[in-house]
Structure formats: C-alpha cells, structure tokens
Image 1: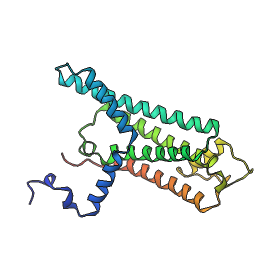
Image 2 (image 1 turned 45 degrees about the vertical axis):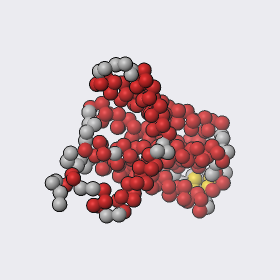
Image 3 (image 1 turned 60 degrees about the vertical axis):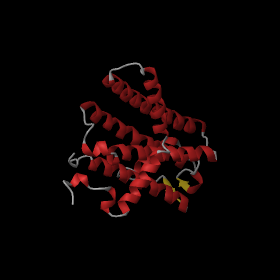
Length: 222
C-alpha cells in the first residue's frame, strides 16, 4: 500500500488521532506567542525585502522568531510578578493568568513533542538542545509561580492555612509539593474547586515529566 511507512496519511491512523491532531493545530492559532512571532517575521522580511541572499534572510527570520519568544517569556514573568506584588485578583486577570498557564504548557508540548520537524529531528543543533533545557526550566518555574499565585490570592478561600494566613513563600512551597515528591501540610484544599486546582497542577507536572522522558526516545525516521 505504501512505498515506505512515511507515505502514510493522517487518516490511516484511526479517527482518534486525526481529531486530536486537528484540535492541537487549532489551538496553535490562539497562541499569543505565534502572533508575536508572525509580527516580528513580517517586520524582518519587510526590512530585508531587497536582499537576494535567501540564507541570510532565513537566518534573520530564525533569529527574530527566537527573540520574539524570549520577549514573550520576559513579559509573562513580569505579568505574574506584577500580580503577586500588588495582590491582584480580578476575574479578568485570573482568566488571563489561566490562559498564560495553558499557553505555557501547550507551547512546550507542541514544539517538543508534536511539531513534525522536532519528531524527525530536523532542527537538532547544540544551541537548540541547550535552549530546550532552558525552556523546560523556565516553563516549569512559570507553572510553579502561577499556581502559587492562584493558591495565595484569587482562590485562597478554597484552602485552609495553618496560621489562617499564607505567605507567598508558603504558597510556592505548596506549589512545589504538588510537582515534586515532598510533603507540605501547611496548606490543604477544602473545597472541590481547590482540589481541582491541585489536581490540574499534578496533571500538568505529569505532562512535563512525560515530555522529558519522551525526549529520550529515538526520533522517527525521516
């Protein structure tokens, strides 16, 4: 049927995979990181439109994409630090923080597991491999900070605290305890909403661990 397994189609793999693939690809288009990358690439291409060296332009585009990703990372950290420092808990801000939490996990999953070039190992270089490690570290750290914010500020009424109040350090330790194997009993979820938030962090942590383990598996043949 095929002249090699790599000639197979998406629909040759049942119906669950194609549906999930479509959903994941749709989520790609509601990603602020991609919008920022698209804008910066357009600016770069406009600036170097008269250059005939395609390799030069490709390198400039790749650099612009990476710079836009780094800019987004800095902005999302500034945002969460702002929320924590000023104790902001409006509904709109909480929704934005939840969206950024989702995007933080989705982006790492998409580009380290799902994206075709990564699966085939087309982009593997020394610097990209090192950048992957940095991205893993900052993505996990951002998840820990977001959940610490959620525990301490907007959803504090769904948890009981040992001293009836909670500092950000305690909230962060509780966040760490839901990701790494150590106990921190000063904070306990007391409502269904609180338990759901804790469960969501455990699931996201498992996804990150799964991604790390998947990276050690040999890539598909190109």
